[in-house]
Image 1: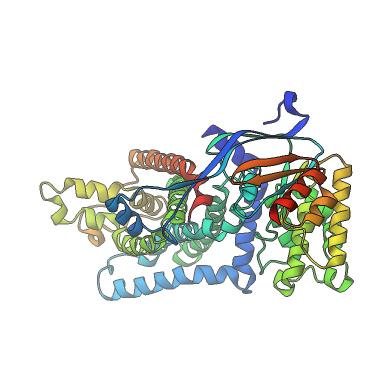
Image 2 (image 1 turned 90 degrees about the horizontal axis):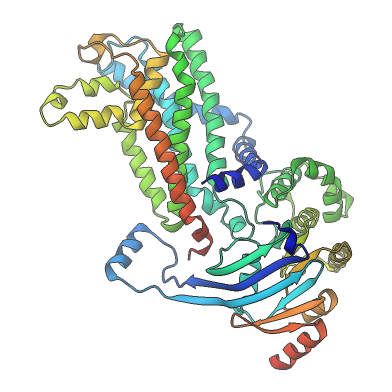
Length: 253
Length: 281
């Protein structure tokens, strides 16, 4: 996917469209499928993204804002290659680490170390790399020595908050060139959040690209260098942080 | 498909981590992890042997239990691999919805974990064969690795198919359970394929297709192949009067080709639908 011509750009979306089929059942089954085939119920689709053109140069920190259902998370998932575009293209130059709903890959019966190895592999980290960074990951997630001492015990001993911190710590240590963040900066207590911000600032300083979704305008003002406001699947406004945030707040109130 | 395989190779470390997870989780919660997974098939063998020997169906066999065990081991792999795979993608659904990974990694890892288990089970079989039955190792054992590969291709293909279908139709796993229960009786596990093939009813005109379907469907052929390459043929009197047929190399090669075909077709189908997994209701 890497091509020399576009390396100045981390992410390029061209006429990006995404539609979903509206489902009427809670879950699918052969029986339901057979009944539907007999009834010939027409398939409805909704278009969530309606032809976006976005270019994100390497090194920018871009915040996606907008109301619920405006297509922010869909765009993030398309960049993360979880969805395939209905039409149009997404070009990504560099390794992506998604920071989306942390800890989805954890298994409660495995120890903390085993979970780190597993989750890091899910995020595309090599094993030697995980070994080398193990101490740093543990230290970042658990500052209390008694928590760090239990890393050979099953993860079920840890609280939900601790699991989130661990997930964040692993993702942030994958050393991606593009970081995707979906509403997870609200992880942990205030001290941990401050630590996360410092880490994000470090990542910014290294010239890496960050794309994040947030409803918290304080977070957006603090971290973003550019803001894209999505409304009904199209870009409403795209520009410098202060201009877009001000317009968004005016429109919302 | 080449592109898909290259992508899979890039994610080989993840595949290995997931296999390790499956094995660790399985063995973690009990000290005798492997024992607990080999015990049920062994108990099945003991019960089948007891019933069939004393009810008189199998009393002309020498060491009938070895004939059952050599079939139960590949059967158990076939059954558990398909049932585990049917659930595998839904178990990882939270991850698949958030992080990109080649989706086939998930059913493949569960199949490989079951495969490792399957290979360990053979150790039990060979220990039984050498130390208890005291049977010689036959030269036809050279077919054994071939059969392992062929069965793995067949099981992987079906695992990909079932895991994919179960994302869209959640009753597939119930159907698979029912079908596998029936298949246990239809396949030559508790008896030898020739006992059915030599039955007078199948010799009647117009029934030839049924006999061929019975003898040459991939799973029957694979089980029969394991039996013939590892064990001495049973006495003709035990299987309906006619002598046991030797291992048929042509049938083995056809089975290999059919299994490869099933694997490729199922993988192609999986690839055609894998992007829709995250868009299910």
